Amino acid sequence: MARLPAGIRFIISFSRDQWYRAFIFILTFLLYASFHLSRKPISIVKGALHRYCAALNEGEVEFNSQNQKAADIAPHQRPDNGTDCGWAPFDQDNYQQLLGALDYSFLCAYAIGMYLSGIIGERLPIRYYLTFGMLASGAFTALFGLGYFYNIHSFGFYVVTQIINGLVQTTGWPSVVTCLSNWFGKGRRGLIMGVWNSHTSVGNILGSLIAGYWVSTCWGLSFVVPGAIVAAMGIVCFLFLIEHPRDIACSPTSTAHSKGYENGTHRLRLQKHMVTDEKSKPLDPETQCLLLSDGKHSVHQNHTVVLPADGGSGVAAISFTGALKIPGVIEFSLCLLFAKLVSYTFLFWLPLYITNVDHLDAQKAGELSTLFDVGGIFGGILAGVISDRLGKRASTCGLMLLLAAPTLYIFSTISKMGLEATIAMLLLSGALVSGPYALITTAVSADLGTHKSLKGNSHALATVTAIIDGTGSVGAALGPLLAGLISPSGWNNVFYMLMFADACALLFLIRLIHKELSCPGSATGDQVPFKEH
Image (cartoon, rainbow, N blue to C red; front, side, top):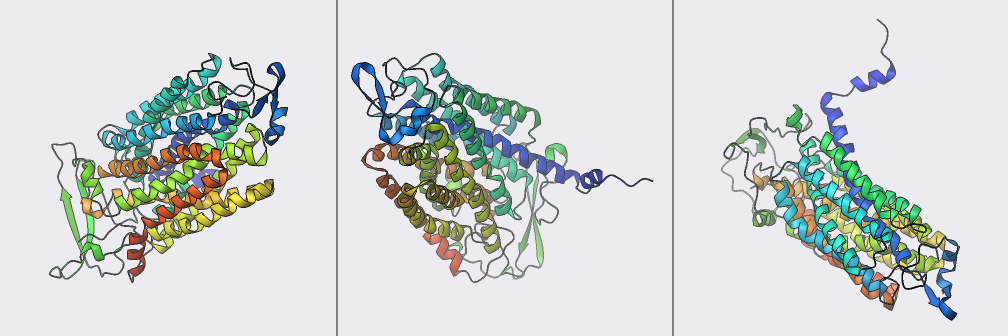
């Protein structure tokens, strides 16, 4: 018998379950990357919506000295105001407030909708829910760009489009996190989700490049093309997304993991290790450490808890207040509020900042801003690896937040010295700013959503994820709005605001960090927010 080709040997070296897990990992990665791809164009197009110019004699226009290099690019269609200062109504002196209002309308709608999205999503099939959100998001992203082709200058049109787009995009995050957590156990969750969460940066990079390609000539396509991509990925989601391993007769988690789920008959079997001395008084949860495993306690007896189905439809979904009572949810939610404020300020305002400081045109500024997202990829992965190794999620976030604040100050200082300094600081700032944000929205959310106090209620994950990310989205809405209000007084003041936000994010983690560091034992395996008592 002939020896099998190397490629075939590679394929059969992995089990059927492993191939399906890899497929879901890649698919959910691409699905949410397309969401971020559609959010990035507005930050790139800001430089085209308002151009720095000063009216001269009889309608002649001259670009200011700070944007001389932008004069070489092809001008877009002139708006009705007769100048090439931008697209009305963003061609006025209050353009920064108007652009900030666009960001705020999207992000405020996203924050409000996120609280409802998790509750709705866990009661509907994920595949249908996510498909609807992607098709609707694609439609409204493209609608914003159609304002260019139909010569629309109504500020209300763009605001309403942003609000509806923000609402429908809330279908994405709870859905993909729940789906991924269904397929992967807690082993090496920080690393797996750290790699997976790089979809945020990948989507931002692709969105910047796609939007930047057309921003100088036809900025409407900077929205229409990403909108078409999101809608196309929605169709892919409908055709290929598998919500749960049981739907295709795969094991829910890897065989090395000690927890097994028996969901085929709507019953959940949770294998738990209990201490030998059953009469010993359990520890007060306030004295237990956050995000540590049971490594310090000896385990000898397996205890099986079988939760019956509720009317044949599985365990009932957790309530909003019930999710808030899970230890660590409130602290991490408030921390994410300020961490996401910083991240989204960079997301929406970095290209315009680069245009002002480094005197680049909108396309080049958009391309350069992708370096922040490149740094974010490495930051997210690094945060996941460190938290897995140390078994301390809060401490990992705290360390990166502590380093981020002075890094932002250095960025604001030396980025004015030249392009080389800007590139270096973009990479470093991206890693430190995105690391805590990535860790909290993925691994920490999944840890808390599968907390032992839930006694196997797998329906809680979408709600917990939505609460954490929804609270973070409040900060995401405030950051760009504040940047629009503060930037006229100077970009240094914007950076002071961002440093203050990082300090607040760290402050909300102090109690959790203290509990992690005061606990004498830690483990690198199963990450559990609090030991069950």
